[in-house]
Image 1 (cartoon, rainbow, N blue to C red):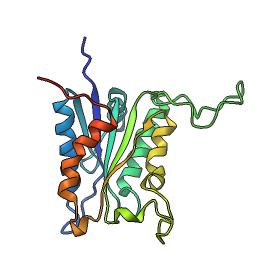
Image 2: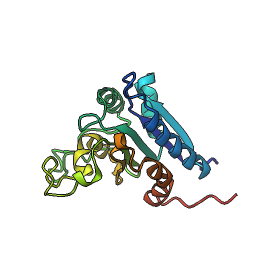
Image 3: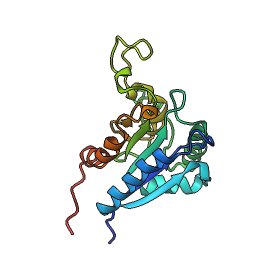
Length: 206
């Protein structure tokens, strides 16, 4: 019996020539891929910009215990191609009843809450993001723009679809101030340790 675990890495980067070519997000995705392979995982990947089949993406989600979204933050959200991806993939998961039966509410049991009808319980979802914003812009009520809101607050539009179908949402990882290149190298270096701690993955001894 094959007990190998599976992770799905989804890259949302959208290329803007001579400005945003996607190298940094690819570097983080490659770092995650290397980490999971070294720990005995099967790695599935989707680069949304390169195209995808929604039905195949549903099957990838069903196969994977962990889904990691690798994304640049463009105007405080993921690139627009990711919204299209979610609409198509999650609709396919809804219509096939592979992601969920309904929204969780039941006339027979009025106590059941909206958002509890998923079939993906036991799976985990995490966002790894690249930011122009500085880290100190978040979680501080004295900051004018975010007014104390955290990155997790800002990512509700990304994480809620996954929570809706049953995923556990893990703390996000970010590299900040990327155009000032302040800590990118160390953030890349520290990423595998973060993944190990977040998903409680024991090192594979060969």
